[in-house]
Image 1: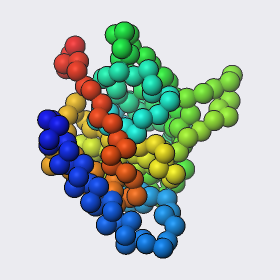
Image 2 (image 1 turned 180 degrees about the vertical axis):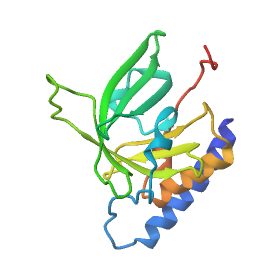
Image 3 (image 1 turned 90 degrees about the vertical axis):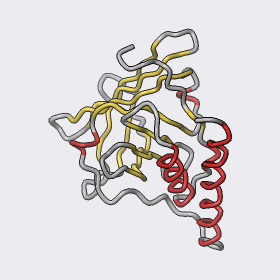
Image 4 (image 1 turned 30 degrees about the horizontal axis):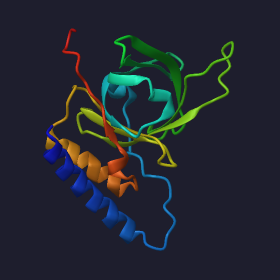
Length: 189
């Protein structure tokens, strides 16, 4: 996507965010709304990171960021996050996700740190946007410090991305805070 198109997309999203914040004028911004229902069987599989709010635990990731989820027999999810570092080496982090809201399956906690099987650190993973065919997902945290746009394909259509940035604005996120992720390795490469 060229920079002019991305600027336009972000401009529309920023306008949506301003409108959403103006509507909530005088009210403290609560946690973002999540999707009504996530079918875990459809959610599992490989996702490509399209954009993210920069964070310290992904500083090493230069490109080709993916997240892969697999449903376990105990109802939790195995998580494998991969990326390519600037030196070309692959970085991989294995984690575990647990469902926090069984009514919707849209609020999860994820842990990538374990001491002899004990996981003292869990992070929020809320699904705040989801394509009708699970072709994309928008994930965030209640404090809006973390956010990701994920896709089943390496790229998203500009119109779909515009809609996602608008959703982020409606949910109280700053769309300009998201950094696009390079997806360079060709399929099968």
